[in-house]
Length: 227
Image 1: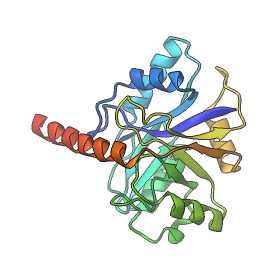
Image 2: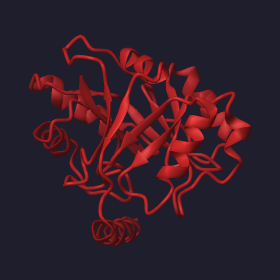
Image 3: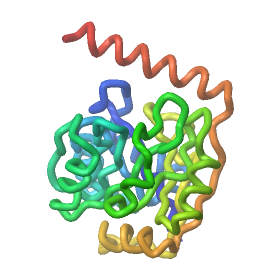
Image 4: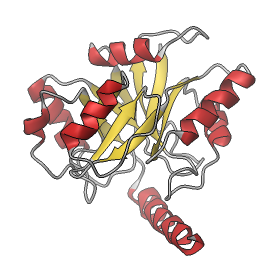
C-alpha cells in the first residue's frame, strides 16, 4: 500500500515558496510515497521534484502534474507531459489534459471561495473524478464526498500544501500498490479510476488554515511586486 498526497504546490506557483526538493524530503519523512506537485500554470515543480527523486534514488513516485485554472474552476491535471494554458473553458481544458494522456480531477469542487463555478453535473461525461478530501479548505469536503458517492465518481485526496510544512501528508489517498522504481503514473491513475483507494488523514485545524491562507496572499503580493 502507498499513501499519495495528490495536491501540493511549490515555489513555481505564484502563491507558494516551497522548494520541490524539500517537499519530497518532507513527504518521505511523513510516510508519503507518491505525490503530485500541481503548480498553478506549469509543471516545473513536479519535473524538478522527479529529477531530484530519481537522481538520489529516493523511494517516492512523482506524478507530473499541474493545477489548471479553467474559466469555471481548478482542475488537477495528473500525468501530463507539457503545461496547459489557463483560463480555458472547462471542457477545452479537460480535452487538452486527455490529449496528453492525463487524468482530470476537479479540485476542491465545493470549497469556500475556491469552488467550481458551473454545475458539476454538466461535466460528468468528461471529468475523471473529483477531490473529496482537501486539508486546506474551510468547507466543502463532505459535499464533495456525497457528490462522488451519488454519481459513482473516482476520487482523490491531497493536502493542497503551499509550503514545505506540516500540511504535506496531512491528508492522503491510500492505494493498493507497492512502491518500486518501476511504478508508473498509469498504474496509479488506473487504481484511482477503479476506485480502489481510501482517503485518510485529517484536515488542518481552523487556526492552521487561518495562518496559512494569509501567508499565501502575502506570497502573491510579493510575486506582484517583483513584476
